[in-house]
Image 1: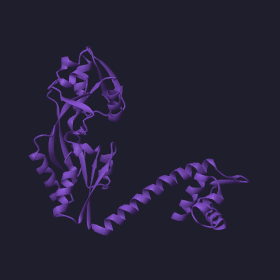
Image 2: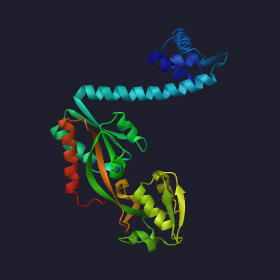
Image 3: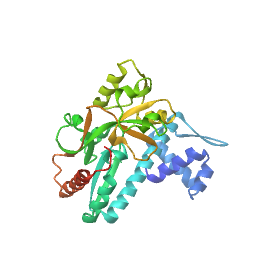
Length: 295
């Protein structure tokens, strides 16, 4: 299977017409049809049913083209990354994190690091789920994690970065937004969004609040769904400070509780590259010197 055959197949699936697809890709129709025939012979099933009005995907073909489309996008990104890398960089460091704000100083660290290591590429990889598995497969070099999660990850070095506290998220015009500190009693009579992949420390706080019977609660699938519900006025929620994108859309008010999170970056024990050590040192310095960013 060639990349041209993949492109031809995707284009026919889009147009459902051999002549139009061939014209769009600037090849003759006989050449186009022949390549699709070769592809169908290679995979061993019919991808398109030909008819007088054009073409139609077979059930197997529809599933196959869906996979090809995803594969083609992945291949395109891989080629682009390869072009970027070969043109400028001699090494790369990839870092997996669930959302961009999780490592708030990452953009600044990348800028500072580039001044001393212009030949090393820093590549953020955003994975709301599955980051640990990707790290264990050695597909990324650095993993953002909470310290309590790292005890079950073998063969790693753990680099503590910062403590993150729990905040109440509310609409900016909510009366609670005027407070400097939220106490348990402030939430009585309100609806609290819970669940959504909350880490254990946050679940403990949520359970403590909901077990009082003095507030309503609503189960939410994930953090983005929770924020959508907060924006819609359906309730408020508690969240770790490292999820704060500092966009100003919501009010983030400190919540009075003992629970907090120790946020870490994990590296592979066998990865002794000086560039990785230097990049982590840059990040640690930024967090050590931070005074105005709520975490």
